[in-house]
Image (cartoon, rainbow, N blue to C red; front, side, top):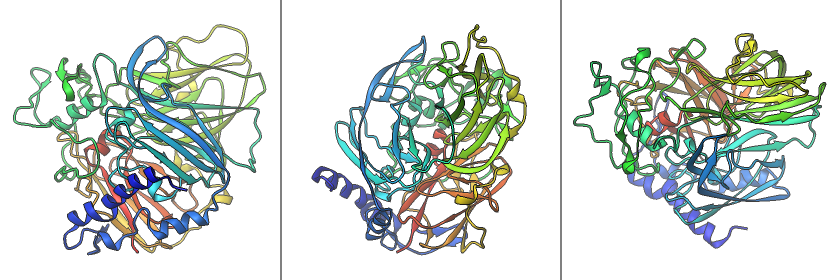
Length: 555
């Protein structure tokens, strides 16, 4: 049963999403599809706490309650020899793993001890819309000093995670794995290793994600090549509202120029001031390229790359016995970095991606975009082996160690040959028969042109930066095709909330998919979870600059 305090906070959020804010923004009709506007107004859409959402939740048959207390708080974090001030859940990095069984009801009491509003998004879960954690769309922001209880049925087993959906907070230490166990688990293994990958900038030499975002949003159009710096005259980027509600971000520019890729410009000027007076070196990255990512690898020069919160110089060690069968759950919690991962001396058998099983396939390495997850099985050999995560295109690595015997650990600079071996892409995988979405002609196609450039940092969808009043309409029961058309010179990991889609005919079920520059990716899903759902690039800085939109169910 909802508590009075939760009802009050929730009511405010629904006023924003279902009526007040959107009615004010929609005028004569703000809805649109990928091929023309619907003419629908805010009241024509299912509200995040509407009867349709309640009915969908009841159909999930919520089971035994698993209660969790979650505190978002400023923290001092040890990255393995380097101490930083940041924000985290429970002063741990990553936050403490939450583990439930499919069919359970998850009840999470969030206490916000941060100096600004926050939220929690349950990445990958098909849950009730009013618990999705998108401020200004599905709930009100959880203000500083306030609390909120997330309560929802958990249906699908798999590897998931949770993080804020408020500004650039996810690029701090606010994230943790969420493992949903299968009560009828078909896999057989001896041990399990959850591996969380991250890129880290917060608290290093005065840097913050907000300051990084402010620098990036100034773009590169006025780069002074003679002085190696930026000419920002006449540009006002101060006073950014880091909540989503009420953002006025103007219009993005479609397509546009590519970015400077001169390797000598890998770091810019030092000592610039960020929001709130924070200072630190420039974190703008240039010259990072990757064939796997279609060229440009990323925007941010991170000082550290982490596995389970630790640097490559002071890695975590996972212990097993020779012959053990280990399930490794990989999760990319990074803000701007794709990781190519491999376990030295071993091949991996891929069993799941984004929580859902696939036909088993062997590989040497995997590429994970931000937000993606892969589960693999390995049979452990005797010795000490590096689990290496290459920051793709950025020429740095994160690592952990797998130890099953004696001997010295390999040096931090060691690069296992498997990183350059066979690499499986998501579109090469096939969904397990038990979870396969049967091919069918879509009832509705939504075209999503990915637009913008580093030149102006005007990332957007269909040339329009995020506005919660604009949404792509769908109806319950439809087969919907998302057609991602990347008109930019950079790759984008696109994430849909509240659903999974299938890539190609019989392809894997996923909620996050890499869309390479110049490519088109078709992703089909069944509209079976009513509400207002975010669809966005999972590069934190692209999303916060405008590459987000809404899929909304019509009443």
